[in-house]
Each structure stands twice: as structure tokens, then as C-alpha cells.
Image 1: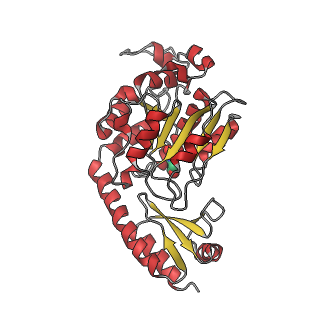
Image 2 (image 1 turned 90 degrees about the vertical axis):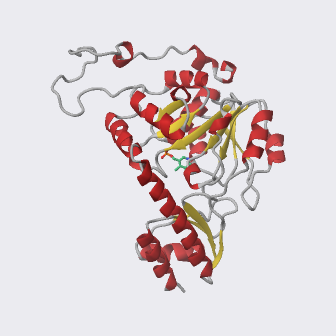
Length: 341
Ligand SMILES: *Cc1c(COP(=O)(O)O)cnc(C)c1O
């Protein structure tokens, strides 16, 4: 299984931090060149984020050995591309329109990007994907629910692809909490080439803390632990996330409100004559096709309401992506649109 990684990554000896070499309890810490005068932040944080991983493992019903935390999923995406793809030689495969960071991370690492567009309803064309794969295609990114379209890909179809593809399949589940379909995390014990990405940025409301979650087989996680920056999650991010994760009911209530609001907003938006289509969404946003998206965008901007203009993305002509806000924010959006003409 280790053959998936680039040779230099496998041969790498990890940097061993002071906090790696001593675990346990002591009274006097003179091992890390920290400032000895105590304030809340004078010590380095836990490089393994042990307490936070135990909590995340509990909430998500997975094992801590299958978890790596990144400074946002964005760090995980970069780690994946750097670990499996030889610069100037290997390639990743993405399905546009999709999350832009896969391509950005690939470009930074001089890794080629193969694009196989989603169809008009934003579902994968598995035959075309299979035909586009070469020996150099090391990683395929599947974003489900997909950003910006909001739809979920069939878990059975993704599993079939996983079982046939020789490289790494990343299933980005940033929006899984808003979706009825099961997560792919239960498949990691069956498919060593599967990496699932989740995040605390969306449903858990912690975008500002920057905590992304990579879930994969334990051997992969051990290798990734060698290459991630030792202190990639700050101490305050770890402790704040632990506090928020302790209140599951609050999380569940917020997700429920967002799902209720998604339905309300979908119905109200559909009524406007200048709306062509509200795409079905399994996420916390709606992709909406307008007659003239640019005019709606500017109109809302002048009312101090910002949405995301996705018109230039493949198959997203005249589309705006609208995040589900609080009930008050959503009403303000609808009221504003009532005076658009
Ligand atoms: C928002 C989002 C993420 C989350 O990124 P973080 O770096 O964890 O905040 C990941 N993937 C997709 C598709 C997203 O839309």
C-alpha cells in the first residue's frame, strides 16, 4: 500500500519536535526554547492534537488512528497532492465545475490537471473518467456534495470507481452534514486507496479556526504525519474546537435550521420570474440560475448583500451561488429581490 507515495516521501525521516520526544508529565520544561514566563500561549501546542482527535473520533464514530488534522481541508489537499504526485510528471483528475483548491494546489506543485466535466445535471461521466486516466493519474478528486452545484454523487457509483481505479480517490465531504446520503468514511477499511476529507468549517461553524479532517487508513495517516508541519493546528484552535464539539445539540439545531431554510429559500426563489432554476442542493448553499445573473449580482451588491457569482464556471452560465444564511438574512435577501426588475 505504501507504493502509492512518492519515493522521497516514503524515505523521509520526520522532524522530531521537542514535544514529540517527551510525552508524559514533568514540572520543568526547558526542552523547546519557549519563553518561560507564562501567559496563555507561551508553550507549543500538541503536535498530534490528541485530545481533539479523540473528540472528533467520538463525534464521527471513527478511530483516532484514521484521522489527520490539517490547517483547513486546504492543507490536506496540498499534502495529498505533494505526497502522491511527482512534480512535472504526474497528474490529478478533477470534475469541473468544482472546488477550485484542487487545481490551485496542483498548479503550485507543478502537477498537471486533467478535467473531465460533470454533465449538465452535474453528475460524473464515469466512462469518460475511466477513458481519461493514464498511468500518471495519481489522484482523482470527487467532491460530494459538490461545490458549487450542491448535488451528491451516488455512493455506489463512487465505490465502484474506487474498486476499479489503481490510484488514490479523494472524496471531499465538506458538506456531508447537510446531506442525507451516508458518508464514505465507512469504506476506508475496505479500500486502502480512499481518502475522505471533512472539515469543521461548514456545519460546525468553525471556518475561522482552520481545522480540516483527513480520514484514511492508518498507514497513510502515519506517513502524512511525517510531512505535515509539526504544529499545524494552533493551541487556541485545538481548545476552542474542543469546546464547540462538546455541544452536539447546538450543532444539530443549527444544521436543522439551515436545512429548513434551504427549503424555504428554494421555494421563495423559484417564485421569481427572473429565476430560471434553483438546482437541488444537499449542501448549505443553493446554485441559482437567473435570466441575467450579473445584473442580479450587482443589484444585491448595492443592497450590501454579497453572493458568489459562478457564471464563468463550466455549465454555470448565469448562475449565482447563495449560502443559506440565518432566517433574518434569508428574508432580507428575498425582500431585496422583490424590488429587482
Ligand atoms: C469549504 C470547502 C472546504 C473546506 O475548506 P477548509 O479549508 O476546511 O475551510 C473543502 N472542500 C470544499 C469543496 C469546500 O467547499
